[in-house]
Image 1 (cartoon, one colour):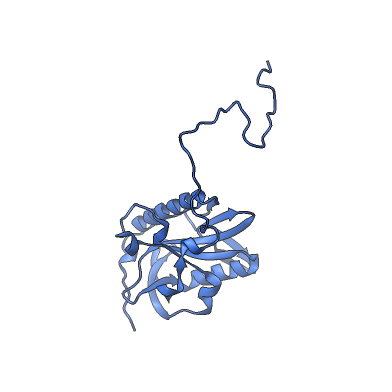
Image 2 (cartoon, rainbow, N blue to C red):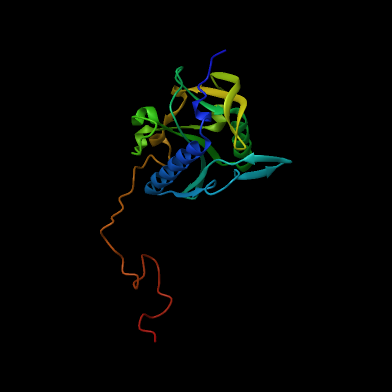
Length: 210
């Protein structure tokens, strides 16, 4: 059996802080691509869940909407293992797959690969460093299963089954329909007069109304 790197389990607070930072960066990036982005896990002591058939399904980190379509990304900031694979807790995949099947919505894993970005502590966010895969496709085939993987569970270090996929199974995030159009140009120099209506908006009252 292969050994796994357990450094990720040494500092829960640091891991959560880093994870939140990259969820924030993902949301900012999604917004620049015309998405409405919702962070489902922010400021929560316990994970956001959905109830189904007597079970509690842990929800993905975020929800993004664009052109009346919805995608739920699980955000990761990680690099490949020495074997060139990305790992994920099996129970998390099971929950996301069930949610995708019951809701009919696409659930994806979106990975910021810090090996491509130049280091784990990098701050610069470039969409070219992101990879993604659909959880339904991930559930059909994985490349390695470790029954004794180390992770955080309920705030405690735990041993759970981990699944691993070759990085070649993940596509550049730029290829996803929500991100393929490129970033929208947002001018910060033009300031709108708040007393004037925006495009397709009418005033609720006359500006000269006493």
